[in-house]
Amino acid sequence: MSDKIALERRYGATNYSPLPVVLSRGEGVWLWDDQGRRYLDMLSAYSAVSFGYGHPRLLAALNAQAARLAVTSRAFYSDRLPPFLAKICEVTGMDRALPMSTGAEGVETAIKCTRKWAYTVKKVPANRAKIIVCNGNFHGRTSTIVGFSSEEQYREGFGPYADGFVSIPFGDTAALEKAITPETAAFLVEPIQGEAGIIVPPEGYLTEALRICRKHNVLMVVDEVQTGLGRTGKVLAIHHEGIKPDAIILGKALGGGLIPVSAFAAREEVMGVFRPGDHGSTFGGNALGAAVGLESLNVLLDEKLAERAATMGAYLFKRLKAISSPMVKDVRGKGLLIGLEIDTARASAREFVETLLRHGVLSKDTHGTVARFAPPLIIDREQVDWAVERIREALGEYGPVYEKAA
Ligand SMILES: *Cc1c(COP(=O)(O)O)cnc(C)c1O
Image 1: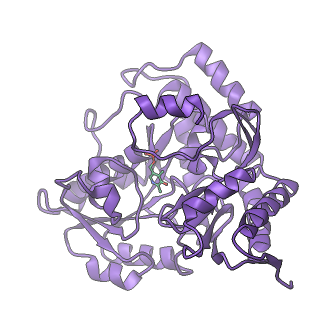
Image 2: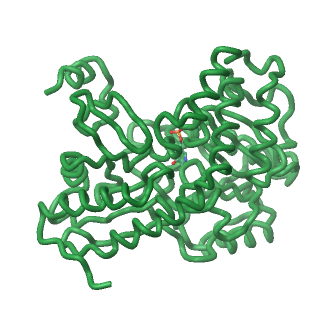
């Protein structure tokens, strides 16, 4: 065993079980381990590295801002935050934005904001507000958020759980309408459930959910932490349906793969409930994060990375679909967020991603049954072809692999 792995296992907490590779350098879509071996990254740090490693514009923004001014807290204005806020609003179509650092903090902000809206605007009786969530959701790891997870391991041992959440099946608008009561503050939903195994809801789901929310005076909050910023082939996944919800949470790629930056963006009426002192975070909205976040959004738009994710995603999808292997049960997803469901009678998804690792492709299993393919959006056709060849080799270890007739 590598001495680095041994050292981490000796001194680290065991809340992760990393694949046995020690990474030491990255460039574009490629990563190198400490032995100098090269891998194609098909995980992108769960979409945090959507723009690839060492993007020159992002590095320049980070370095220039770090040298100039990084953290001052929000006790003062900075010259970096205002243009970042304006850009978030332009990209999301929302009226105001509240910056945080991690995705979970963005979700916590959404919970606090929609509850306060319920009490002050909708006039729900004190401490009765409910938020509807979906089975299979993933919104982060705080004690409140794991309390409404349906994943037993995320919850077990971390109770007592916060009150006020109701869970319904994902993709089911009838269940949504049925779950709404006069105490419902908000419906919190992912456009595609990433951690649940790349679950794509029925066509028109978000549009119908928004119609139901409007009808009952319930806020719709869309968690785009993973699906946002080009990942699914549009700047936001909600753009596939052209809807404008009441609030949107961004994270992961917003930090350009360099530092944690997240944001909660909302309509005027919703964000308007916050008064000075109601909510905050020492690092949220710091000048360094704002500079990198703004440049991330500019890179996304200037380099047309959403369009690129649409083309490259469709191509990767087509090539994976063409593989005939007894290991492959399903290929699903949108843009460059693709899940390969494998036959766990032959191997666990974990075992399969370890095989992929040996063939030079980095991926991660989700839900024990799915290998996730979400490379940096800058991937080109040749690199997709390279990855598909390695995936075919890995699948070949478990049974014959053929190309299906086109
Ligand atoms: C990753 C993720 C989060 C949590 O983000 P952190 O930065 O890990 O706290 C929230 N929602 C979704 C959909 C995510 O994929």
